[in-house]
Image (cartoon, rainbow, N blue to C red):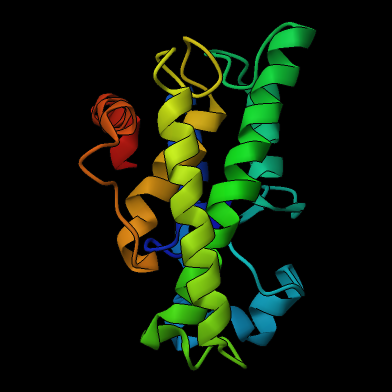
Length: 203
């Protein structure tokens, strides 16, 4: 199998970290989004939505969407479990994963896409006001996750899961979105230091 991805983008990194936690060898092919390689005919045939990452299996089957690819990895390599093993664990992890995606990852992404000068050629139209509004929204949700992490080691409980992977990728992407952790975010800072020390974080 092969992962089509851009090393700089947070979504492909989510998949790489997930695979690394599972011990899955993941050959990759770089797709330079800034050069619009994701708009090529070859890439369009793989994903008409022009988004990365894409996982192409050995039989030619194509999987898109980061979490869907991670679900596939979870099924073929259940250990260590990153999406829960009991119905309640699975539901809780999914809930927190969605919260990170919807309330922090999404606005941070829009802040980058509509606020960073390098994205002007790719985001047409680039709406600066929308980027600023999303940046303000993301900053508020950083405070929320900092407060939540006061009472537990990881995002969805005491065990490292896909929710932590998503939040790690968002936090590391904050500078590109013109955001950052502030000095008073002690819980997020503690959590970020711990998860960044995991070998998979460098995937």
